[in-house]
Length: 315
Length: 171
Image (cartoon, rainbow over all chains, first blue to last red; front, side):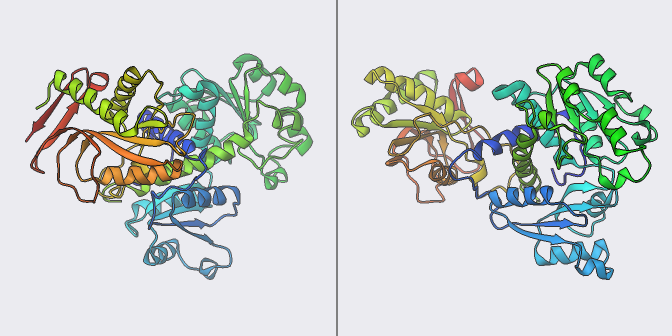
């Protein structure tokens, strides 16, 4: 694998392979010595044009566990704010010796441009681009869910027949998109739930059922997992829904809705959570919540992604 | 080059040699290197257990993430590492692999062991030693020395992995 740009172009075999390598990486993280020499001598650059603490430190931890040198580059206050182009920034980083560039960018498709332009020879990992994709988030979600469902027998398996509700702002969410492509590739059945104003145009062509009523969706689908998306604060004033309170009442995972879920249903959230808004504390802190497992899985997933892109003949 | 009976005989002899050099089954841990080393380690542990009436802890040790040729080969997925529940601290660890060639796999295995614990001693058992060492590494227990040209391929096939039991040279 040269680059990891999206989950949409992963085949089922490739996706299962990444999840299996993640299993191996997760196993090494249970040891006393967590550091592996695998990427010794390689340089990973975190190139973040958008604020992100979680994703950046997760990638940083993953690269360090594999003994790579890590350079974190926040575009704010850098030459980028002086008008430097993505091409010049990337070429500068490669001249410094970057082998892998982890890119987060507000423009959808920026990582693909960097990977396919021929400007640089480094591998590109998409750490979130606009409203397009966030592949490592979807992979860590699938990994967490597969572990919850199949346990130690996870290796080699998909998520066939697993019913997943994805709830919230589908329109702006790259996490929802990456998850939808990956989950359906792995055989899961996805239902997208949210206000009609936060559903993207052309959603009818997506391989998912769409619902505007969370209670009805819970009752009909009887989900194995419910994935709550974060509602970005800036959207709350953009008139996508009348008020924060209305959103919370209609599409939040309240204590009542949590009680209505099947007993085996796991509760997922990519973080950071708006407690009491899209998710009630009783759901977020219950043993069925995977929020912290997702964070731990994030490091193993990114170790797998770095390993698979940065090694191999020609890498 | 080796048939079923030869493989069985070689493993039986190695099992006796391991027991003899360790002066008994106490403190022994066998770690196989995937994939065929794991099968061989399981068979050796069963034989040693039979000869000494003891339960020999056996596990697998994946060395993929410790290799020094990751940029020279197509990327491969690691295999699981399973360390017996008693750990390896203070034990005599016998590494088991099918073919010993350049010695680089064993170099990687020694690094991997150091991240898992601190054994009292590490020994090496291989079914076939084909020569062409690139590192100062020497096996303690050898099934068969098989002088080969580096252009040849040595194939080990075992019941548990391949449904046949033989060692062949190609090329």
